[in-house]
Length: 256
Image 1 (cartoon, one colour):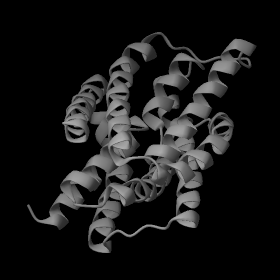
Image 2 (cartoon, helix red, strand yellow):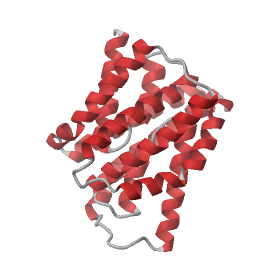
Image 3 (spheres, rainbow, N blue to C red):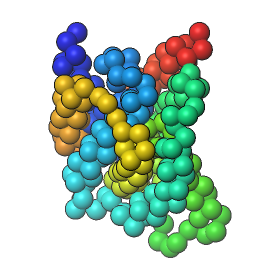
Image 4 (cartoon, one colour):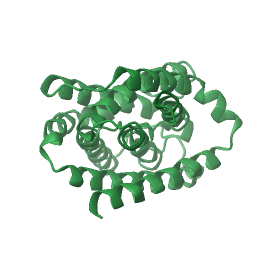
């Protein structure tokens, strides 16, 4: 298949994931760049961060004003992970490639499990009216730091893990968790991208990156409207199955 068409299709899927589910774009973008578009693995994480940063900003713009974005919560969540993000970003290119690939495969499987659990978790979730108690605050801080490390090391925004965390720990309604996770994804990705570009730079063919980003933006812009027409659980299950298949393929490629 023509590279341009592949880039457009992959970008549309990434945009739909970020805009409709609040995450999952990075874990789809990295393997798409490497295995379908021939991008060097060393550059795929940085390119993915660029794609996720722009796409999540677009998706967030669609959610602002709908009452589904808790900006302060998202900023605090991302701020906790800022230092781990920077540290992991600087470490990424120093680790063996098969180790990163294997870690990414495990992460994709975790993301699939989180998506499958997300629908069940949101059924019982109710908004909180007061600040979280110390235990919940500690769990939230730990989750934020973990997401920051994941973003920096593997080149993903972390929204696929932020959504279930916001639902299960902070008890946000699912739609609010999706909108708020875009704040987390945008800030995490921006910090990691800035660190990588400052220390290493990136070399990706504009003929691949341009169509990918363009299609992702369009997908994110229309994601809310399209997601509203599709059953939420069915959409999440579809992405979860896709991620599981990706995880299995990457594990085989890394260690077999």
